[in-house]
Amino acid sequence: MPVDHRVGVVADGFQAPRRYELGDNDISAWEADAKGEVKDPWQKIAWLVVIASETKDVFTLLASSKGALDAVAELSRAHSKEARKKPGVLPLVSLEVDAYQHPDRKIGRVKFPVLNIIEYVAAARLERLPDDAPAAAPERPKASITFDKRVPDQPPPIDADPSADLEPIDDDIQF
Image 1 (cartoon, rainbow, N blue to C red):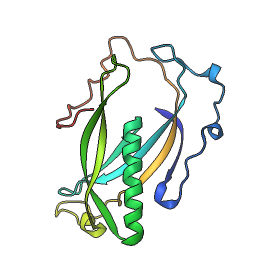
Image 2: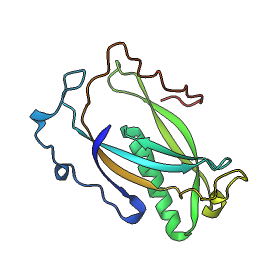
Image 3: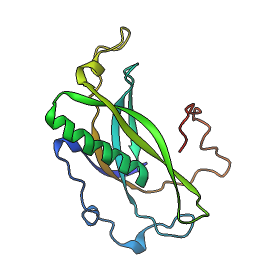
């Protein structure tokens, strides 16, 4: 669980802070990961609020890997150009997957998300609610960037199953 974060909406002009501005700059105080390498307590994460075009369900895509951060950044760049020309439109996006062979053969093929803009639609089209939906309209999709500071709590008991409370994901794209 993050104990601190810096977050803002890109469309509102938020600029992510530089790493040195976040504090915790003493690398000797950082914890080591399973490989014994020190891990920065601050992690860059992009949040992308999306609305399912058919159901109007609202989801938040959290991107923290380099490939996912790059995908959200590319989508944001492409959309910002179109939004300046045509205010009130949002991209209809497909979520796909691509891969590359990592230079370290032990790692193998690395999959990453690709967010392709199919077309632009009127934002109002996505705000129409199904008949049985609550009265409040969903938020328009926004991209934001955050830095989360993670400080580990007590480790879970050895016999604890971290996936016990999770439901299986049923989709065709695997990362």
